[in-house]
Length: 202
Image 1 (cartoon, rainbow, N blue to C red):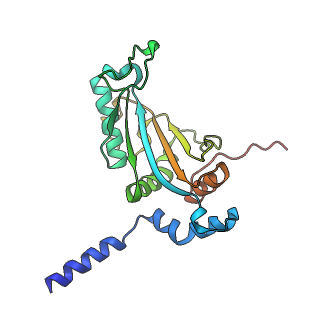
Image 2: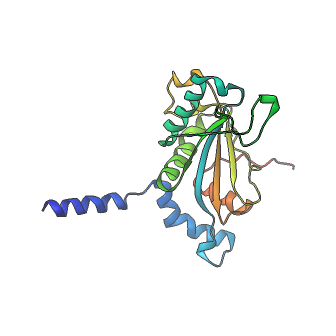
Image 3: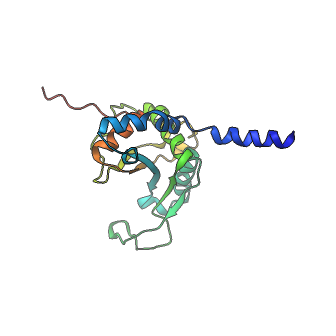
């Protein structure tokens, strides 16, 4: 009997999926295929990974600030942040290539954690941005990947008053398979991404 219960528990866990992931697989994928006029379902744009990062710039030697950045990323993603060393020298910031102090922190989300983060970002964090009028429609690159910048980490409910003592921004990059500017836009829009309204020239 105990063995049967264990097997059932494992099955239940494997069935449970993040809301957004389930929505994409059950409804959005087929809808996007039709909207984009794609012959093959495997050509439909699909979110592959999300990179959450923050550069520390001139504050790289400020231990309290860098610890806050690393902690913020870990709290809002549920995954530890890794430090990023300088890839090139920047005289203005007195940064030498590969120097010891980190120039930023990042983490890369995939699968369930990725979908859970995107769901919270769209439905909880972005509505808390002050004077919010939508995210830019023009932040797609040629491959259809999308970059979103936030001025403050405090829009995430996981951030406490103490965490907010050292304010910093965040950059969120959406890496999209089979992406294009049109296809990736429609994918993120179908997730509920609140894009800014097009200017009315009439």
